[in-house]
Amino acid sequence: MQEAELRKLFDMYYLPVMRYLSHLTGEATAAQDLSQEVFLKLYHYGPSTLENPRAWLFRVATNLGYNYLRQRGNRMRRETAAYQAEQEASDLEELAIRSEERVNVHQVLESLSERDRTCLIMRFSGFSYQEIAEVIGVNKSSVGTILLRAIKRFRREYEDRGEIKDGLL
Amino acid sequence: MGCYEDHMLLAYLDGELKSEGMAVESHLKQCSDCQERLRVLAEDEQFLEGVLSEHLEEIDLSNAFKEESWIRLKLQLNADHKQKPGRSLPGKSRSKSGVAAAAAILLLAGTLFFGGARSAVADFLSVFRVDRIETIEITTHEMAQIDTAIRNGLKEIDIDNIGTFKIVGSEEILPECTLDEAAEIVGFKIIQLDIDGYVTPRVSVKKQAQMSLTLNVPGINSMIYSLGGTRLLPRELDQQTITLSAPPRVFLNYRSAGLPPVSIVQMRSPKLAVPGNIEVEEVKDALLSLPFWPEKIRQQLASIDDWRHTMVIPTTANLQPVTVRGHQGVIWNNEPEHSMDSTSTTVLWSENGIIYSINGQLPLEQILEMAEGMK
Image (cartoon, rainbow over all chains, first blue to last red):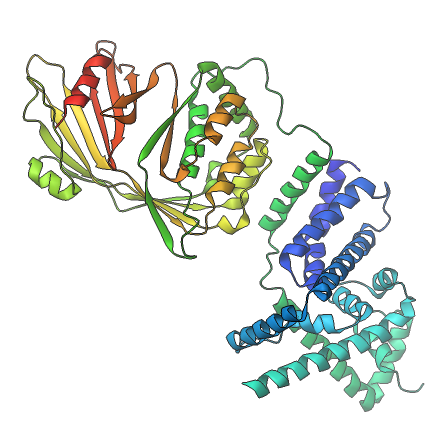
């Protein structure tokens, strides 16, 4: 791919990709690194004629995003119970500090299945059902059902956590 | 036609139904149950929209961020290609002044000299003083080389992109005062010449304004990139403010009949305040990654370990390092402004936190002798 072409696609899609990966990973730094990797892949391995560059970029972003989350999950599982205790302590602390603030959106997102989460994030990043279907590998007609379930689950989980939090304080 | 399931209503809401959309619409007009469920779905979507966009508020998605990301991507591409960053220097150079080269060294020195104390408690300002002078050797040819590289690289750079300069207050001048008054203002003992013929100088004091620079890191990074550098400044430094306050300066002017006039300046080392989280090493690495430094100079710069308290002065043919009263200093000749004047000599050194300079139309040895004898 020529640099001029890369620049054009970068201008159009970098911020949406970054936004999407920020939602997916919940970490700005990770999202930044992964976004860079997406465009490096586009430059090195991107097909010379991309019919739908947007779908291609988000497919790659989704793969990289989940690889990252899996590695992070493994890393965290390898840690001992001490880590968890520490995590919980700091969660509580954070809860106290952020008493006025919202429920941790990222934790809610993480409580969903991979498919539900991707579907939700893509929908709210402005993707069509067709594009979502391509990325999560289902028929377009199933997207509505999956999305509906994901929305309801997210909201229930979010509100449950809110109640627990309110109960604590 | 019967009622629609929720997922169909959602698809309708999301504008995903084409021909079927019409049918849903006409059904909705006469079915209060479907209307109610559509309202709930719309409310759900709105709720998610709100929660998710709030989640992203803390993440920088500005165009400046995008531009910087592009630079990072390009650097990575260059590294992958094993290309040498930087560009070939054109053979013909019209540059003779070396001004830009000197500016680059001053930029490097200044930026490093502005670096902060890493041990400082976060968010507290760290204050330090410059109390060492280091010189690096540079030839006129090397100066010209750097100069060309900078001129080529900086063609499209707007100097305002580096940050915002501000001058706080104005310079006050106390044109005539006694030595005691001056000493009280500057806060240290003023030393005088101790040489025949040079007595009772005219004393004046200048109180300097404060200068501050608020860094624009994306702008500085694109400059580093245009110059072929491979290391960028960390984003955390963006919008951080560096303040330089110059302490009051005392001027002693000796004008005696039959002797060349001599003027002396004495001041405490300038004080810099930088946010505690500035990592001086990162700034140093970024600037030393610029490809135009001749290797010998890069090494000299890299070997200075205490950047925070050091002022770096490039020495050329007419600017030489010198030891004055046991301290590191520099001495140089000033070209006369008018052809009738003869060349003057300046010596500058730092001693116990105070910077001194002596200037006069005298030969180098005599100026040095004057410095050594001061009391």
